[in-house]
Image (cartoon, rainbow, N blue to C red; front, side, top):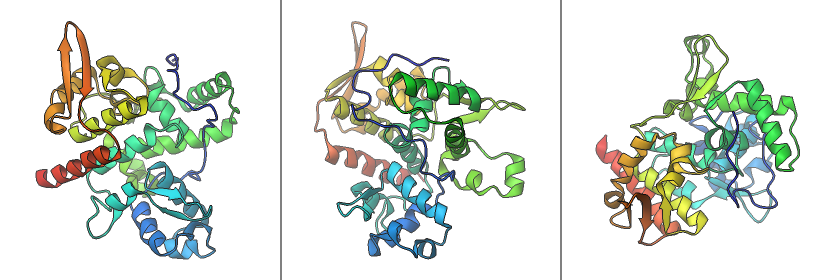
Length: 317
């Protein structure tokens, strides 16, 4: 298993990958909402001695909640350094009065969490590598550890230790792998409560310690979120058109991150004009397949796509 040639500008010049911070705890559905509510009153929550009391968790879990809030895009550090607050996305998503889905009960939330974590190399690098750079989609903990060490060496970054990577990879697996009957019987909380395990993106071969990512149509993935991912990709690259091959296979693309096969991605692109209200469209002329975005682009457009996604999710229930 090898990686593709790195696109120019995939990583900033001062980029340093992160392989820790979660304290080995997988994301849990209730954590972000609980911390959001407390942060509204105590922006210094994560620096407070009584944070474990206010969140009702252990000390290491407090640090893990801070990590997950940041990588999921709902918390950010303020100028004061030890203060945190909700991002605009966090307020729209987690507000008790009119938040989109404060307790992450809908597939739209699960997929958006996955996009925020797996499409961002600055967040949790092992997640990014597996869903963007790993070829073939199959790995063991040992060979993924070796690949990540080789990759960081090639990039001139500090090479993480075996133990650091093994803990990081194990946490990633527990986020996505469906709980086994044995885990359910034992009440393994990480496996039972992580919303990412609902996506069906990672599986293990029966009786083996070999894992593989699962590509397909993923019917619970909202079309609006695919449009949002395309918009994010185009804004990041400062482009108004983008080739189908890039949308399907480039790092930080909807095809790679959401594990959509070509036919499934294509079927969603045919809905793009309707989903975006005419702001974007797919064309296939003279063998050139691409998406063009002719409407407004930027933060307001991105948030509007997410707003419509959750509104549509509620109507379809």
